[in-house]
Length: 402
Image (tube, rainbow, N blue to C red; front, side):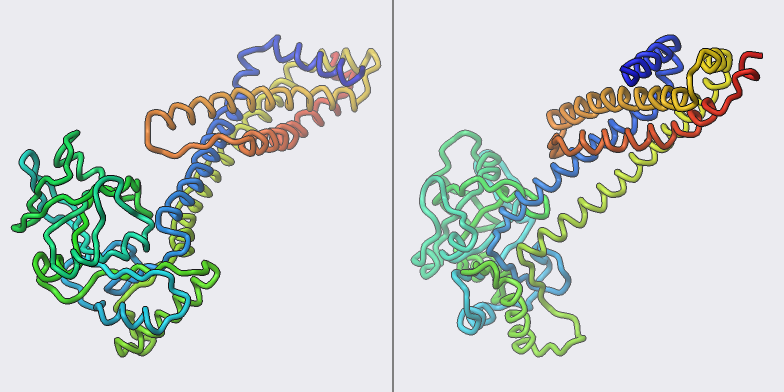
């Protein structure tokens, strides 16, 4: 009953000064709204990371020509990976389920009767489909016969097919890649976004021998895709592949590698590192705004104590104990922060909903965000409400009434 009476008196005092109460909770509203949005973006980023890892392949290892740690295939004639390297890895590394060498170039001219675009061309072997778990949804995939005969056939990603042929049936149609005419043999399944944020479906696939001899005129490859039998062995197999390539390329550490190895674990760590750093930075800003809101709350409550000296003195004279006055002002502080939390949570959820429908930002609203917001609000309300409450409780009744 006593708690109810104190809460009622605190609510009545706040309602008597609505504008002052609003300014006290304004900082909390902004901070909580920012915190909810940041948590939602962070959760969405984490979900997006896992989606990209799944797109890369949870059992995959990618070997890329050229040094550095980038996943994107190198451009400009990097010649540090060969078919012989791929064959050595296949024969000497145990635990491999599928191995697929391929050569990829970006910005290649691709033309149909109705459109002319720049796209990525990947020259592949039949194992590429199994290594990527990426097959055709219409037509046929690249076969061993296509590779053996240097066939001028191609597969189109769904994005590229739409650019070149729109809604028309592309199977059996012809496209010109650079100066070579290719017949469309199949349409690849939709893959979506690559681990590095590109469009997997804006590409064409051709037989590896056709690409190396007729299109690129080269004898080296850009990538080797390895699919392992046991995902727990990925790190060990990556180390074994690195040691084998060191031996084949005559690289002695600390000399820089002329290749890069990327696994699903590294893709996840890289993506999580980027999104995690951004989330931490934004969360710090949100917490700072909550602290600023708490300081504003404390200052206004201190002013309120000065304005309500007669009220405090009268309550003390009528028998209210110091702990009652302390409890009332702490209650007012908590009410302000909790109402601000609810308002900020609603605003944050609304902003997250709008962002998820108007932008490509991944947004996931979760209960953790609201729980964290309520926890922060209670801490801010109590911490910054203690000093004004103590000052009010310490007032001498006689001096206050005078």
